Length: 277
Length: 308
Image (cartoon, rainbow over all chains, first blue to last red; front, side, top):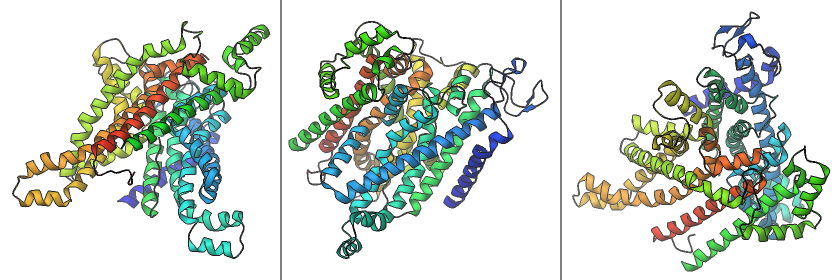
């Protein structure tokens, strides 16, 4: 049953990635193009120019389906970039902290503690607010809040590996610290790092949507699931689909990521993954 | 015991300093020119210069930091240009609304999550057990701000039985409190379920059964008490998360708490209030974590300094 769920989740996610990458070519989204006569049409309506609006139109007459596709691109872009950037920073700092120990470990770990004293979404909100709304700033704000989680995971694995026999023998053979970290310690960190990364992709998507919902995420001329939901909130009574559809898409993708994360965790032995919200 | 508490206390004080430092870095160092961040792009050169003087931006960073630290410790965050008056006083005024919301959410989590978890443990593999595992999987994944909006759509707009925003009636609490509680409901139920199952497999349960106690007594007297310890401690952490999550949920329901104040302040560049609000939330969070650790230590006599 577990693997069936994982297969279904993989399928949904593959579709999501395809839509995010190629969808905007098929259903172009133009944030400026508005059709006043086509405002707030329900799903399945035919627009004045003869095109078909599968998921209805918004308050400015823009196609909600095209918005959701455009939003999937932002969502995927932000999540992947944040996890890669945050993961790399976390990997390097976690390796250094775990391998060298001592004062370096103390500094890196304490900075991490300080940051985790904040609920991470608060720090992201503050950073995004101070940096101003832009795609890059959203990525920076979220990557800053995520590196700690990766660093902790990697540090833990590095700590448990650094005194193993094969590391000692490499040292005796004259391997330098960088070589030991890259060739002997890094491989033991990959599995837990990947599990953590899967979990974080989902959390980052929700965080991006939340920032954009609050008006602190991507600028308004770029469609994000969060900002579309925020816009739809004012039209709940007359056009529920504007807020409902992007949220359903987000929920579906995040749950599928969660299912994959669970099966990845079950598949990898003795990994403890810190799920920090 | 005292050594442990003292150590955790010192750690918490360090974390509070860390929080103050991080906020200082974000608001004063990253933007390059905090004066233009605070005043916005329409400010004239004279206004900017006056603000720079006021903030002491000409001083070395370290001097600025220590001066700011002193101000924060005196709870002097400055004036709110948007609301008028002391920034911290403005934040304190909004505190009761957030605490009420978090308190009700906690009550909901406990009243629904605990019985659900116990029920699932006694019916493993049945419908209620599957419900718990679905809830714990999806509850955490759902974007809570969207769930809130959908609840408004269903219960306020379609069924028209609950108010969508804070209108002063107690009913207005229902939707925001439930939205806040939902991600943790399934989580707590799962925790209780697993804890109960673990306890049921222990020797003392077999002993209790073998001396002829009824299954009800075994369960209610012996097992439940032992599952309570982790629940009590975890509730502190949940409360901390509620106060943090409330930042977004309050915005959805126009709830007049600290969270919505913080967002409004950040959007309107009222950084004195934003800083006071975020630090108060962070201190709550740190304080609750401390309380949980101490409580855990106190509640479970098996935990000794060596095992911590």
